Image (cartoon, rainbow, N blue to C red):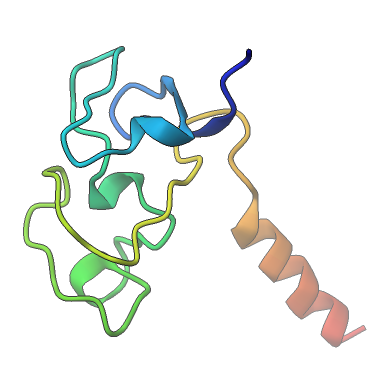
Length: 97
């Protein structure tokens, strides 16, 4: 049975399956924790508290495991990372054509 890839490690880019994101799990490639803000789809360094979720409790260290209920794995370093910024820009430009 093949492992379904859910994301990639924030540190080394190794592929992670959906069961690799437990609070106590570490990346097999670099040993860093996997259930951290830096691996979450809501992580945004440009936002207040570096999170797109406005009701999430602030987490000070984005590289340590936490209990945030909004955590969702994301493709951050892998080749399958969605081009959301480019897609949003194209959608905005299409509005003014």
